[in-house]
Length: 277
Length: 282
Image (cartoon, rainbow over all chains, first blue to last red; front, side, top):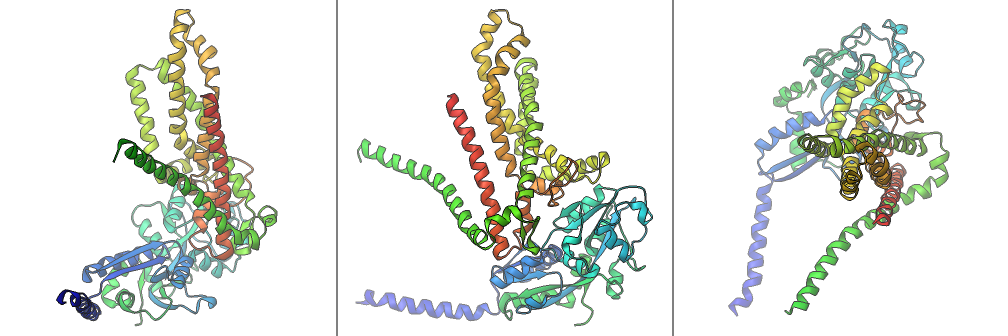
C-alpha cells in the first residue's frame, strides 16, 4: 500500500519544488536570449552581452547578424527574442516596440590616397546614379569611379536612399556588398572607389591604419563628436525591438543596454550614447 | 542468434544507413519544391524569364542574369583549372623527381582543405586590387573565375592524377619495351586515353563550382546584369540567396527557394552525367 501512494506523493512534492524554483527564478535569471539583425549593432550588443553574462551567470546571449530587416522579421515571428534595427521603425512596423540604445551615422568613404576633399549632396547623387563616372568631374584624378552600394535589406542603404531621395533602381553600382567591413575592405583595396558605411566602423578602421578617408558632409567632418552634437545630417538611432512588452531576461537586457554605466562600451564601439534618458 | 540472423541484422543496419543518405537528398529536393510553390503560383514561371531584371523590392524576379552569372563563372573556372590539372598531372608522373611530386601533391591536397571564406578574403584583399589595376572596377567575373579555378583545382587534379597513374601502369612498360619516347607515349597513348577522365573531372568541377557561395560573394561585385566583358561584375544564384535570404519574406523568399531548386536540378544533371560516364567506362 505504502508503495502505491508514494508515486502521487512524489509528484506533488516535485510540483511544489518546481513551483518554488520558478518563483526564485525571477530574481536569478536563467535561460537563453537570442538577438538577430543589423550588422552595425551586433558588435555593440556582443560586447554588452559579454558583460551581461558575467553579471548573470545563468544567462546565455546569442547574437546573430543579417541586416535590420531580418531583425524586424525575427522579432515579429518570434525567431529571436530581440531584433536589432539600426534605423527608426517604419510606418508598417509600428506593431513592434522599439528601445533606442545608441546613435550612429553613416558617411561617404574613399581611398586615403584620393585627392577629393569633399563631395556635395548633388555630386554624391550624380555619382551614384551614374551621371558622373570619372573622378576628374568632381575635382579628382582622371580615373573611372568604382561605385560601391549596399545590398537590399541593409538599413545603411535605406538611410542613404532616404537622405539622397533616390530609389534603389536609380543607383548604378559597380559593386554590391553585404556588411560594413566588406565595404571598407573593398574601398581600401581600390584607390578609385567610393562607398558609404557606418561612421563608427569607418572611424575605427581609419584610425587603425586602414587606407580609407571619411569625407565631410556640408563641411562637417564625420566623427563621433559631430554625432553627439547632432551636427551630422546622416545619422540614425540604433534600436532593440521586441514584439510585445519585454519581460524576464529580455527586459533586463534592454534596460542594461541603455544604462548609463555601460556608456563606455557604447563609446568603445564608436557609437554615441543617448544624451537624454 | 544464429549466424544467418546476425547477417540479416547487419544487412538491415546497412540498408537503413544507405537509404537514409539517399532519402535526405530526396527530402531536400521536395522541401525546395514545396517552398517554391508560392513563387511559381504567385509570380508565374513566365516572370522568372520575362522580367527586366532581378529586383526583389520592385517585384522583379528574372533569374536569367543570375543563372548566366553562375554558368559563366563556373565554366570559366573549369576552363582555367582543367589545363592546369592535366599539365600538373603529367608533370608529377613523368617529369618530376618523386620527392618533388610528393611534396607537390600534398600541397594540392592542402589547397583542398582551405575554407572557401579564406579564398574569398584573399581574393578581396589581394586579387581584386590587382584586377582593378588592369581594368577597373576590380570585383568582376575574372576575379571570380580565378578564385574559383584555384578552389576546384584539387578536385580536378586528384581525378586526373589517378587516371594518369592507371594509364601509365597499363601502358608504360610496353612503350618503354618498344622503345617509344616519353613524349611519344604521352602524345600517342596517355593523352588520348585521358579524354574521358577529363570529361568527368570537368563535370565534377562544374558541379562543385556552381554551388560555391562565400568566395564568389566577396570577389564578384554582385551587381545583377548580363556581363559584357570579364571585367564586369556579376551576381550568381548562390550569392543572391546568401545576400537576400536573411531578410526575404513571402513571395521573395519563395522565389529564392525556386532559384535553389534550379541549382539543385543543375547539380543533379551534372553529377548524374559524370556518374554514367564513369560507369560506362568501367
